[in-house]
Image (cartoon, rainbow over all chains, first blue to last red; front, top):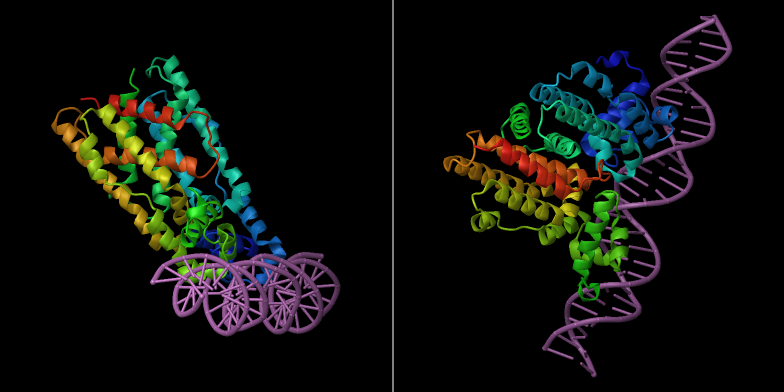
Length: 193
Length: 193
DNA sequence: TTAGATTGTTAGCACTAACTAACATTATGA
DNA sequence: TCATAATGTTAGTTAGTGCTAACAATCTAA
């Protein structure tokens, strides 16, 4: 992204995201954000009104979102392995793109109102996954079990993987891709009819 | 715990843990901590020297720890279901007792040096679990697979469950216990020889 | 070229925070 | 009972933070 072509609002929002992901919302001053964006502190307050409003508008502008329903409809093949792999990849793509915003709003309870916006995806995904598991059972392609419980299990596993990498030091050298492939095999074997 | 019998240092450390778990390290002033502990701010600085030293000593004093090796040695029954259930319960007990300290040091990168102390348990558990899976394969009680990858999978699932509950709003009404029971069944079926 | 928009600079307000000094008061243990 | 330790109170230092006002400078579009 060529900063030469960005207007000041964009520069300020991106600078805020970068610095706050690293140091936390309270650990960064508006002076630092303005300096990193290469504009004056006055410009920050003229464009956004307040520090919190800057973050709110940054979340609005840069929070990555996609239509999960459409993705499900267009890509589900009713094969447990292929489908879980697709869902897993979609999950980590969304979370990875949002990781800076995610860590900012997760780490500070004062941003709980902004954090509400980030709950959309997990809730939607839980519902889509639950419906998917129910349908797989109807098609006798999966053993009979509580679909929502399996959906939560899958999501917690992915969430644990994501959070492990978000907050620093890894405790193992095995790659995310390898672990996800292996755990999907676990689901496939464990849920075989 | 009867606060009437606590000395000032203990009162200050517990007040700091409670307030910082709720508002974050930077979101709490030494004035607030002292007030919550019922002592003067001067007393806080006389006993601890600095705000950060107060937290460091609180972690030292109140971080829950146990000998996982001993627990493994004394409780492993070489039955996958029973063993994973025991390990799961041990994990959540440790994490639950440390949850306030965990959320404090996790949320603020300025405390990364203190956070190092909290990595002990996950690393130790990863090793114990990997050894356990290797031994189960040797005993032909589990299918042949990469033990460390399975250990990481189990830990990420538990970590996802823990973090989901640590940072607020649940996305489902299904209890942790139910999900853990179900996911252990998944492991048992998925890893059956 | 010029009017209007936008930004930069300087100075400042109001307040908070971590922390310290000095003296008074209270608690504690010998 | 009393010396010492610990704490409370008052006042303060140093530094920083979010934010604003007023005026100068620069940019942009007509």
